[in-house]
Amino acid sequence: MLLTITLIISCLVIINLILLKFSCNKTIKSKKIDKKPIVLRTQVVNSSTAQILAPTGS
Image 1: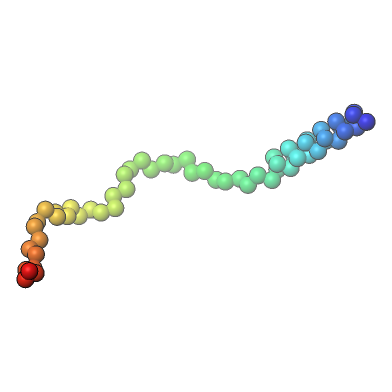
Image 2: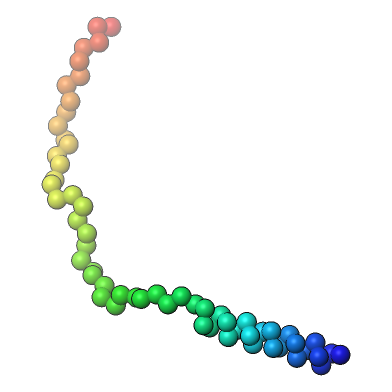
């Protein structure tokens, strides 16, 4: 009885591994890696000018 249980579990594990091997989705990996930095904003903004505040009257 112990031998039968061991054989059944072993067969199920082997079948599971075979199904796992053939059911994996293959993804295409691109081997070309662009190492150039990506520049999002090319204009330099100078924000050091002081803003003139309106008088509040208080």
